[in-house]
Image (cartoon, rainbow, N blue to C red; front, side):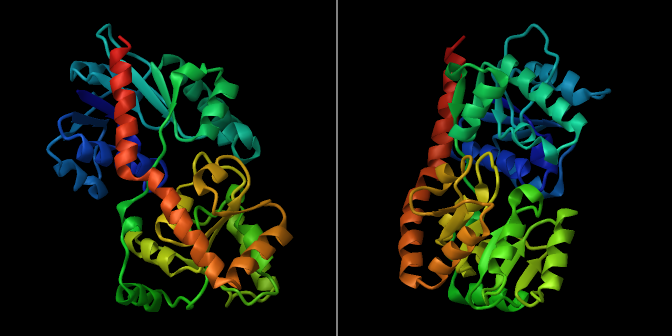
Length: 368
């Protein structure tokens, strides 16, 4: 079969939707090489050139014009004789010609509806319209978690029979067991302590890093933070200065994917008390790294974290502190949970993701 993709995020987003797009296309191209995978976008990017060397991954520049992604991309996919068009980031083109093509859209989350205070009025309106329109157009809708599936049904009134859950995996770098020498090299380069708590993700209010910092106040436990800073970060820096925690909280910038994977393996505990996620890729990264996880008891996070992560009320500082100290003081408990979580996370391996996605592609072709 020939599958076309809206590849804007594939080429131009460095994390999040970009990682999802690149990993998905790479995985299905690896596991099902007999198909053709066509990427539609205005242009490519340096970071994706390795993937474009795959013989079954093809780039097609979309037709020129105003709003070409919305008005031309779908027709370009039909002209290319694609059997399926897959919108990877919650939207589908608005215009098509009469030629038959099957349509699939992936919905990642509806955070803009769950936590509207984090989004502008305009962004909320445009996201809702795009997502609702895509769910109505699509022959099948892919949700990246059961939580997202429930949200799609609630907010867009999409019938359950039209939704398929296909989980995400994570970058291959997190599935490699690095040598002690390789880990030590990164530890020395970044001047990391021998033991530390790790938090990874954009430093924004919804991700709730502030609660971790508050929980570690008056302890000697080091915290390493990897993530893009936002205005919200200023509040955290002020708190750190006021409480003389500058030597306790380490912020890392410009970390490569390979270095991040090694930081996960160096970490003693991974803490991720987000208020809401569509899936929670950092949790998967930590479990593949055999690092025990503490995360929120909200949204999809128990779904991603499985039975052997520790769960907290993300707004209860005392709860977060007690769970961190419990694992920090109990190496055998950390090892037990990390080993069991490593077994659990295999359900998110690439072979399974590829099979699940191809099952959806096959199903949508059989529907017509």
